[in-house]
Image (cartoon, one colour):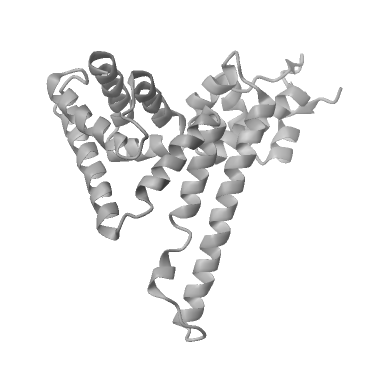
Length: 256
């Protein structure tokens, strides 16, 4: 079986020697063996694990989350690779559309073509939505597709004002939750529960039925599973994701 030194792995993967040493120190990627000379040696299993780490990093997973995923007893490398492929394919489609939009905009600004103003935004929403949908189905099974299809059916006749109102409502709920956290209100307090009732009703607008207890708790978990949702909440306020998840779970346990 082939063995590779840390420098050889660094050269193959593009990961610095310093980073590989750090991965070893935090238990994320241990070498297969350490020689009497102190050199770290990596085999095929370690190279495949490093590939998983890099895929998760490309999808913006923090190191602690990657370590938890790879350490899970039910971790399935083949299933993970299929999920990565699906997510990256959705991203690639989105970037191809964004490139077309960029090229068309440049051509229009240079006077080579005319461009409808509505086409200025092609690629920014539908492709990202497709990425989320693919991720949800891969993660939670085919039953999730029913919820997605129902949500699309509900929104298909919405006008611009409907979407604007939907977004404004979401922003208001998140702002109130961030303020509650900053003010030190416990996530299971009566005041936060009142915000959660609004959030539950907001989610119900595009579901077949108001989310029952297990589904609402599952939705809270989903917010933590996807890097975009994690980043969204953490960008608004440090620690908001965990606060929201705790509040959703407490509300579901108490009222659903």
